Length: 504
Image (cartoon, rainbow, N blue to C red; front, side):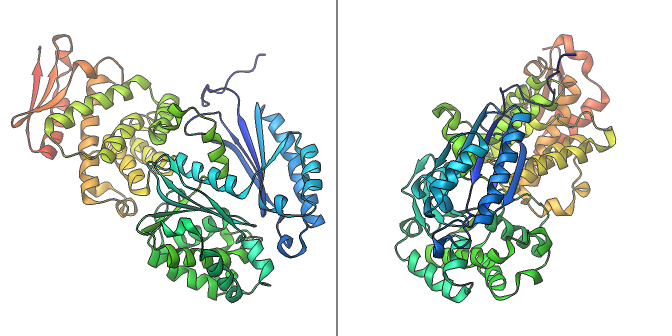
């Protein structure tokens, strides 16, 4: 029997994988294919601690080496099972700093079955910045990638990168050189930051935090705050909040922190050093905000391999189009919904920002992804899928707006039905815009039955004091009390009188 292609997978060629041999962990991530917003289909890490004691002994420990080699042999088999067409293997600080690094890399190449690129500190900084550029719309700030052996800092502004620096300030390196003494580590960090040029350009901008230790700290901070959305990428914290939390982490035993069980035992001793680095970065650089990035070196390498045209594609809209293709009844309808709402917004003279426009377009593409659910749960399912999807290029308020727009489209326009947790993430203006868009969608789907070719012929626009839905003669029979009621609901939101115009 011939193998059938999984209909839930994009037809974007064979999977591509990246193996990252870091100072603390060895990780395999396999992606669905080479796209602007690549989706992982497999992700596994092994905490090997290759960088432990390298700063003082200049050697990779034998036990760590053997553990890493076993992980690489496993990853080789997994890549074969997934029929990965292209495997890229990177090694970072531990392998480049250790005297027995070359011997390890030779054995590692035999274990994984692919060449290994030993990247320099400046190259690591560049790839981390490209990962952030890939994952954030119009990134502007300084990227900091904290690994086990080193910390890379680099400026990023739109599609432009500054000169990166690599400092021996990874968690394992600091633990090793200071004998586990946080106070000694503080002086080491301050001395190293004295000439860290990227931090001199950070004031009033964003610090993008990359790396597993900082993600673990963010996870603990989310729990402490009771934050409503457990999505790491784009989690944003005010500098004062970061420093207050950092002081707690530095002061207490990691095992006493709330929800510490969410952090692996091997990483817990490094939390204090991660907190110290963040505190010193804020003291030195004075950023406007700290944002967690789930994307770094691996995603940066994939992004680098795209064409210039593909790189400049909006990652949120790319991901939304892919989900539209995989889950909606008629993908072209979502595209037509964008143009239909463009005309509506323009005719109403709504003061829409560029960011609001891109979010509206993404919501149009996502409007029909929950249609297979039971009618009573389509709104809830759509909200959950969108709020927790592996999207990049959107912040958490933006996620909430997308989710609420689709929720209103299914459930109705009452704000009483919104989860108070989701409401915490959005402004009053965002709720208003989500209701208007949800109301427009409720009209659109009743007119078109989610089929393409209808909306361009049945525009809804503002004319004077009226909101007019124009139905051509062959669609005049679509007019009904139910459709008129939905036009009335939307008209109330935009302060117009409703009218269905037939036969023109």
